[in-house]
Image (cartoon, rainbow, N blue to C red):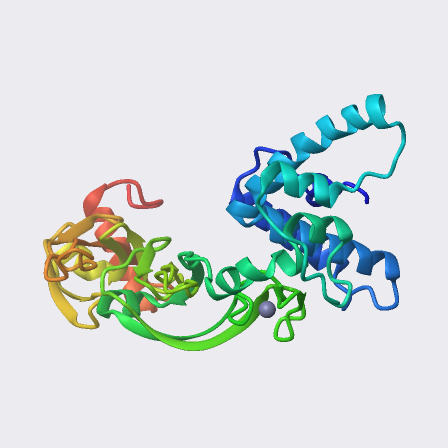
Length: 349
Ligand SMILES: [Zn+2]
């Protein structure tokens, strides 16, 4: 019988956590899965070894027994070398004696899914006595947190909105609980992969006042848990599309207001769009300079915590100069200039 180094098979060291063992197994199982290596007996062998190693190392009880066995094995090899020469050891009997722990009376045909080594250590498929309990007991594991990006408009961020998400998650196979093996055969449902795909349509609410880049947590809508454990959470990462008019600065909003020359000079009323969709009238005083910003208090974006509180809106004046002027306007502008600075016009002196 050949000693199997399950840690080496999974490419992990002896102190590796259960979670890392699981991910090491997943990675290798995908690589050597018969589906992706058709007609490749080496891959099939590797795949069986991986499943066997994973079944032992992912189970705290089996792992402990295996670790203990590794020490006994070394000791045994040393004793046989000195006292018995190079005899093939009847390890099953020896080990039964040393631990008093298990029997191998039920080594029926298991389809070759497990090595002699495994059957010696754990009996057929982990031992009939423990198989019923370990297969019935799916491990309690909280579902994964998932993250999904959603893009919304500024208006949607203002009022709040909903989205219907099409979700496809890789979840632990419900038949085998993610082990990939049932009754010592590759699981029929997931074909040994240990995972299955779960399709869901989910309507989610995006609250008013979300900011660009913020994460909205939707409780218990992530990956499902196993063995009755809670589902993970779903996080929506919100992107707000650039707006043709408004620029966001946190809860503050900036907007440019085109204002004609005469209103800037003489003062008057201008219309200011706001992110709520309403238009406000803003009175600007005479002599308003280009790029002057007016603060409209409480007309910005709502606060996520209390939507009735809103940031401010800054309306920046952008003076619109006349592009084409009539002969009469030209004469009048010349007169205005002469009033401002008499004597600068050619021929006026
Ligand atoms: Zn399965």
